[in-house]
Image 1 (cartoon, rainbow, N blue to C red):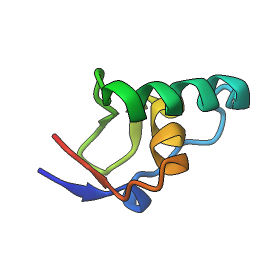
Image 2: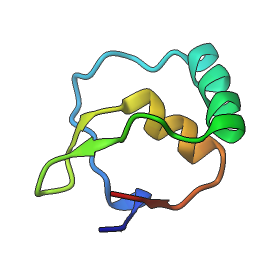
Image 3: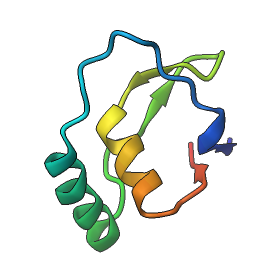
Length: 66
């Protein structure tokens, strides 16, 4: 299943995003690919992968693969 990245909701109260980590992760994803999935629930609420999600957004990708 594919959904738009913009449809993924992030609960408030999650730990803050580390911008340096996102830049490094984005570089890795562009070179190797996304090795671990971004996990969401049935209502498209993020369960795991906030930094991966932000890195994918930084790379300009718009869809999530499942």
